[in-house]
Length: 438
Image (cartoon, rainbow, N blue to C red; front, top):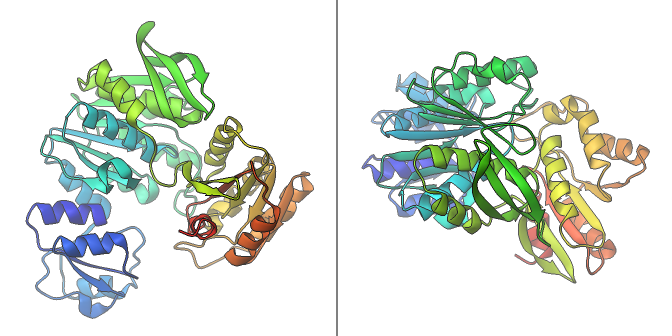
């Protein structure tokens, strides 16, 4: 929401809005001329407002939502507004997938900046190279993440779309994997005839997703046949890959990544395919990917304390956790300590067995309470349940009811040379920041 507010402010709109508490984002918006209210109250909505925009987190009983309805003010969801903004650009790139959206969007951003393409970018994380989650450019190129939750991305108007992967998630909204696949198929079907779909060839029954697509379809894969693949992969001592990019059966270029993990090869291939097909040179692609060193909360190096390396990661789905743990294997360390904060009761319950399996592959697991986010019902599930199941698999697992207890436990048990990862989509990063005195 803050990124879209910045775009509107830059375009000359009068913007107001509300948040629970002040933050660097709200402070920046205030400096740029927005009126920010702290606390959501009906009186924040006045009758002179011409349009109200709300996010997926807002429910009908929200006082500001109800007031806007009572005044009969036109309303758009965040996704609908984003879709309207996309219409103003000749090239609108939308990056979707259950995992990897923020990283791939950031990789494409880095390449476009290396090529002086001057894009407008909306990314779902804090990207240091653009100083936040938004960049306002002056070209006909717009780049954004496209999230499937609540079918938000079906309000978009992309000319280039990326589908990185399709897995079970957001089961508080979707019925099952078939429902999710249907949503992604509809998203692919939004593309115009002169558009482009870049999709991972390893997605199950890919034809079911692409059957109604009228534009060219380009495939990528880190492990099987596709239009763009990786060959001769080697990893450095930080787990970052270098590889040859194979396009149409021959070497297109050689790429060196500055972010760790096998999963980032797939993300990079998607970024390469997009940038190549919209006319970015191989030289700028190589330069941009080499210069991309990560986004906040994606295997982010936070610092060291007492010889212990502290990493923070946003992973909150079993597949993402597996990818992060795989990246950690190639990162120099003695013992690995994983502090995991599950995100939402519905996801934890629906994917319980998968969480137990992947977390059992870690050396030492410390569990914080489930981060409820938008949910009120705990569905009878808890982090203590996860802890017991992981222990039953023979992995050292510990549960603590507060961050202070977790910090004290880590200070007593981590040794020089160990690797500590705080992980989750909630506020678990506070543990890393507190340990490091940030």
